[in-house]
Image (cartoon, rainbow, N blue to C red):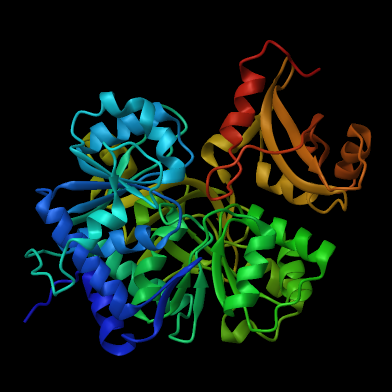
Amino acid sequence: MHVPLIVTDFLDRAVTLYGEKTAVIDDQKTVTYSELNERVNQLSYGLRDLGVEKGDKVAYLAPNTLEMLEGFYGIFQLGAVMVALNTRLQPHDYTFILNHSESKVLFVDQELFPLVEPILDDLTTVEKIIVHNCSNLSEQITNYDQWLSQYSKDEFQRALLDEEDVACLLYTSGTTGNPKGVMLTHRNNYLHAMSAMHHIRVYDEDTLLHILPMFHVNGWGSPFYYTANGATQVMLRKVQPEVIFEKIQKYGVTVAHMAPTVLNALLEYHNQNGSKIEQNMRVVIAGSAPPPAFVARVEEDLGWEFVQVYGMTETSPLFTTSRIRSEQKTLEKETQYRLKAKAGYAMIGAKVKVINDDGKEVAKNGKQVGEIVTRSNGVMKGYWKNEVATMETIRNGWLHTGDMATVDENGYIDIVDRKKDVIISGGENISSIEVEGVLYEHPAVLEAAVVAVPHEKWGEVPHAVIVIREGQTLTEEEIIAFSREKLAHFKVPKSITFTDELPKTASGKIQKVHIRKQFWKSDRLVN
């Protein structure tokens, strides 16, 4: 008999096997898996009372909190669809997403309520707004805890679901135009969780610190596979290095997912404060490929295992990992670090290729560049109400990522750039990631982003925007001279901008699109 793959199974398993174990630690709030399940049931009864039915959209604008986590399962029991909102958007973005998704109910954390307050009159489908951690708000606003407390904790009679039913609608940030709503089914999320929990090696002994936002590509799946394995989940509202180290030490955290920029900030904090973590710790990193020296610092200075993964919202999200395979453990450490810094090889359940413009796979020589395409159980159902964009992204059964990469003789994929981030200077293709890797080797460089800027002769050339480490000094001439020692001259940044901070997404990913705009909107050309 076929049993549909429904993500509510994960919480069921945790309650059965780990009912009295601590499930969530959220500052002063701590609940077991049995207590989490009771709150989830209350949420489901409450949503049903509000008229939410199978297929309805329920939106969440919240940091990583207990309330956010229980939303996953409380919504799914009704067969409704969760719309998790990026917490770093502008009010007009929320207007578009909430209306486009046809969200019926909006849950919002009190500290984020000012982001939606100006647009309340513009929302066409939202019938009810409920505020988490509510205090000192108007009578028109419903307090979540008071609202939840009136409903039963008893088992909820779930909607009849098929595994191909949409479970969540996640809007990609997009660099042009309005964001696109990615439809992920129960099957997508379920089979992705089964693969990811194997490759990340999730155990019931684990304690996860939720650093990446749960709405984010590499943060979204974690409430499924860590719950399924009965791991303890520690919440984090804001990414602050001192708070992260405090929670890691206090709660015995063993695993965390984060962006490279966040891990870089933790390395800096460690170097300045010497915080020592006694337990074994692993960090799961998704984002731009870091230089091997960065991996070495994490494993040697912090003593943490570095796990690089790769994916995107449209693939649920992960489909490659760069974990060292058994036959490679005899390789020199430097070689292992180089492999760990790559996007890696396909996870179970995914097929991955790197193809040229003719659709043929590139040679496994680490030199030929092509686009990463994938087929997997995690590939989205499509973009909500955007069939054209769906057909542009999924062609002949393969999802086209827009990421350019090489493949080495071991089958490891190495991302060289996003298509839009490749700099074409005088007909030569320049990987901004390669140039950034060199810049990060300079001891005075804390963060760096390389973008194309207009040039009269070459069309465009590399320009670097750099954040200098505290207490260090650096000049434009010094960093350019440093780069010339390590790069072909056409790849060397022709100019430098020093700044106190780089624009980032909520997950900590550097937003090159915002950096690029300031140069291409201006009339200034680099000579």
